[in-house]
Length: 131
Length: 57
Image 1 (cartoon, each protein chain N blue to C red):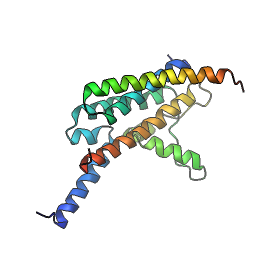
Image 2: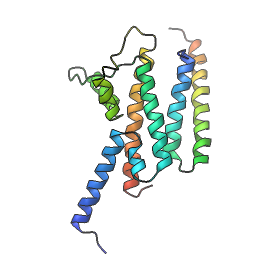
Image 3: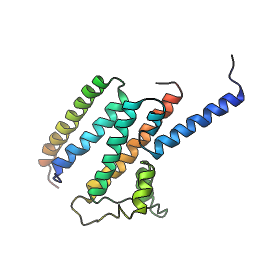
């Protein structure tokens, strides 16, 4: 039986919702898709990596359009989802440049965001039946 | 813990866990692949450090 236009639209909305959830909370996409072990692993590992970045006094970069590299770092930071905005709202991630671990902290924060983007793509692939 | 090597090992641990979970479905294979990745990251990092030691800035 052929899929109707309404079915395809519903499927697309479902895919977008899964991707949105996967971005907002690390591992949530996999949890919603029934991949409990993977979802929990992503949730714990990526959240801890992000928190380590904050502990190491890394900076949550702002979206400063005049500085393209800062914008790229900010987009990578935002890849971790809602935790980024909670941390910003709580005043964390100011980034102390003179701290010994400042650059390490940035690396942890940026890579945690980028890895979560990969996790979102993986959740997208699962919804498309590729995995 | 906040030494360069300590943080490199912590970083390698997180990245290995996420990549192994992404790329393998079976938990035992995840563990095996994650351990291989972790070892490669740590040994590669230390080897690269020693190579750079001979090329001071």
